[in-house]
Amino acid sequence: MTTSYRQTLADLGIYRRELVAAGATFPLAEVPCRPDGLLSALPAPPAGREGWPWILETPPFPRAPGTWPKITIVVPSFQQGIFLEETLRSILLQNYPHLECVVMDGGSSDQSRGIIERYRPWLSFARVAPDRGQGHAINMGFSLASGEILGWINSDDFYLPGALRRVAEAWVRGADFIYGESIEREEADGKNHYGASNPVRARYCRFAGLLPSHASFWSATRHQPLWEEQHCALDYELWIRLLPNLRIRHIPWPLAVARRHGATKTSNPALRRHWEDDAQRNSLAHPELYKRGIASRMLALEYRVARGLCRRWRRWGLRARLKAMQRACGWTDEIGE
Image: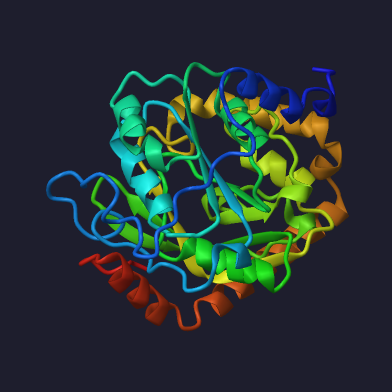
């Protein structure tokens, strides 16, 4: 493999022009903002669904929409109809007053299309058509973004109450990249577990699992296209290019839930070859991260120590935060540590 990754990054301007030619508007319409919140306006939840984001919402913001930065959230999806509605409601019921919500579905044949149509009046843009994979879908979504802050969330994950407000408040204090804690949900038993975040520095990008993409947000002015040849390590490779020279701010609060089920990329053994292919591409595109030697070993030791200290520090007051999140979500089961 000799092609440089810099030669394969998509031109988002071309994507935008193609989507506009196909009927998209730019800039996109924002998600409707109501002083009493969107809960009563959205479709009724399926029978038996309780708690967040089915019958609960984040209280509407007290300040005028223009005082908050615009946030664009892209939702890539394919055959995730069993989870998609929960994801969409978790975005819309943030009641964030300056929001674009873009759904890019790769042509699902399950119930996804019907869900998207039911929620289309509250979406900034939705496309249901074949694409070239997750990276292509996310890049197309971001090509239409006009928000100051960007983020994507996969359609089997969902945001927690107040997540976007916390991001906006952190942004106003000064940041180019914002990340928070997360909750991991085991679909096999429905249990929720706290997912501690790592210390994030540009020099730590070589270490897998550094950041939860579902709880990460960054400046639109610093954004770069995803490398579409990547099948599994999309976010890992993006952080390598994106994080250097950014002002990074951590939010000590769970922002989103990541589901763990048999079809997730990190859990599906059938995707092992894709992970290996991604690693090979990354070793060619970023050879400096794969060098062996004393400097590499010392950095790995530094990261292990920093990670341990960081996680201990961030567990200070954790039980109270998790209790508060449990109440906000209306969950009856405790969030495990």
